[in-house]
Image (tube, rainbow, N blue to C red; front, side, top):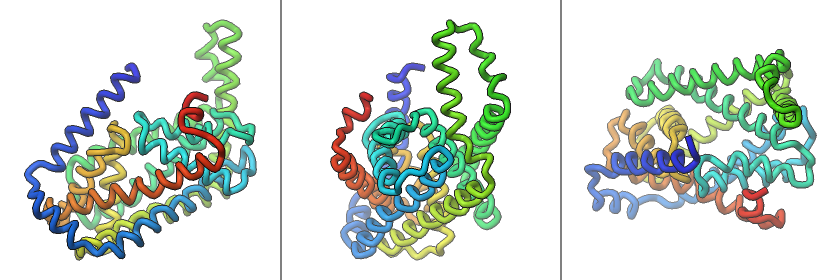
Length: 319
């Protein structure tokens, strides 16, 4: 499937979920909720969201350590630039931008860096599914969320299995490319070997344990941000509801969408709150504020780091 079709599918899905999110909404009630919000809590959530990337960066630094010990500031800059790009570019190109940004002055191959990013995503999937399994004992999730969770679990298991095969039997994988010309074969071999280098954390139980604990800590932190946003709109729900909304949104934005997860983010935030009987008007107000909190801080930080490194988004994407 060509890139244009993938972008088109993402835009169409975003439009569909936007329509579902705004369907049968009383905009006067949404305006009233936003107008009477407690924005002191919004400011707190804004700074908490930005600070959360320090935790993300520290986790990524640990994942990169088997390849190279990179100073924290460099890792943080590359990570925020990547997430900023994810918010404004299609097809999650921010992941590639992150790998390129880290490669400047560090001499790390993009393949190895991308491998750590894929492993990071797998950790995120399984931590979210862990929370999903725990809270499934308390709250019945909508079928849509259950189906996406099942798909995410299947993808995660497949990716982990492939990584284990790649690390333990690289020659077996390379046999698939024997039919190629020698020059192209060697290029692919070099890329695969670099990618395997980025997977070495899988063989280090100490680092795996640290990354697992940091992943659980990070997603718990995200739930606390959601709980803070509940206070903005005076939504009286227990802390575990913030975790459930987090799970719903995180699984929802795994679907193809327009840049910034517009539509999918809003719909699945509303869907998560609907479990607790929150009205669609209030839920949409929460979704709008939550979307701002999720993207505005990192876009600002990412642009700042991009300028600080003397780069431009065009230069990075064209590298």
